[in-house]
Length: 274
Ligand code: NDP
Image (cartoon, rainbow, N blue to C red; front, side):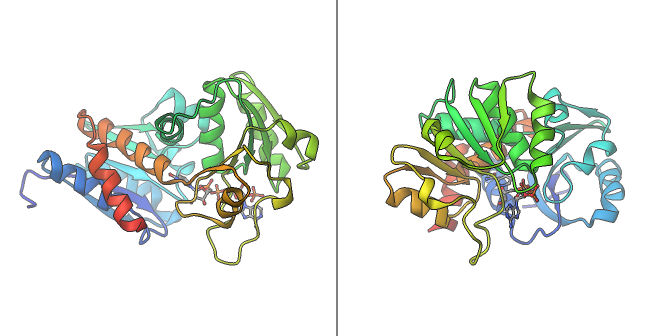
């Protein structure tokens, strides 16, 4: 029940209709009996600044930030976490008595979801496909865990930019072609491109290079053609639901200072998937 005391949190993005975050967070608040309500806000690019100012004006406790605002929002905040500064993107804002603090929980969400699946990143050779916002968070997370990273992107200049920003935290190389010599030493392939979101998308890499025993991770929530192909070839596969869950759990904790009821949030996502 919404009362005069209910604290409001939410998500800013465009488009926003597809978001699963309200279902996850509202189920979590209900489970713990917390007087919070999570609301989706359609925020157009040109209105981002006003929308962020409204967090203060309307006494909103915090928001998640999604496409296309994760990078632009940085300039609208009072304080940015070390991690978010490095990644260059914010996906969670906390309103602390009028002071707006930005965090990035995507890197944590990605790494934590792999830990939950007992996948270690230390000293692994990883091929990351993509160099957009999600790829940056993944690159930061895996380098911090001690992995060796190769990045391939349609637009190589963006991959080189990531290398430039992150080379002080780990081993990172840009590749402009996915050659068999490189695939031979790769343990984990991560798709952080948006290829696979649409039905007719081509695969983000030529399926003939897939090797039995490798692990394929797709940040997209569904079983993409890449994951299906990898499974057929005897690879371990992981979709993006785990990352979604754990980035949300961390955001929940930033807003409430209470551990998130992860099982309840996971249950919500499972129901949607089935
Ligand atoms: P961005 O728009 O920032 O980046 C998109 C990436 O995909 C770029 O590297 C882009 O390459 C590449 N790309 C797009 N179209 C093509 C194409 N036709 N051929 C080759 N490469 C292409 O998006 P995000 O980084 O925010 O998101 C990427 C994916 O990750 C999305 O599918 C999103 O749903 C998912 N995601 C999942 C999360 C989770 O919690 N599981 C969290 C965040 C994102 P180029 O640089 O050349 O344009």
